Image (cartoon, rainbow, N blue to C red):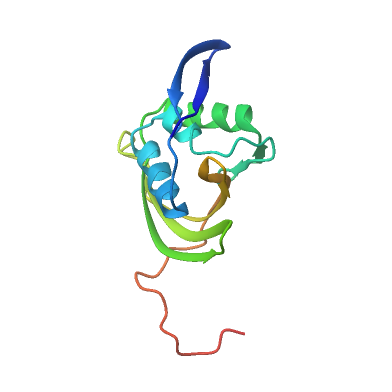
Length: 159
């Protein structure tokens, strides 16, 4: 493990926390959705690559770039509490240094009884860095209609 990440809250330096090294992109993805379910901003932000080019797109929102903008957006989301997301229908494209995960997120916020479950189409991109696998892109958009419970079988023509 070794390294430490300096944490900032309202421009104040907090105690450094150990950097967790992830052996696979899947490990980062599990930690990502776990941090969201716990509204754990520090753990969530520790998953991102140390790069100014990281980006995040929340459903219906503009693209955010860089740690500060992404952190601020998740901080506002977590003000309402945890968000429960069940990732489904995962499709992975991976090589030795990058991974692209395309999935459906079933999202429900338990603190709002009027809020209906949403289905989100998401793409998560990960890079293998000297500090292990890290997230570089999270792009989420509202899915048109409700997704089928099961993926279509291999029958039929795609194009």
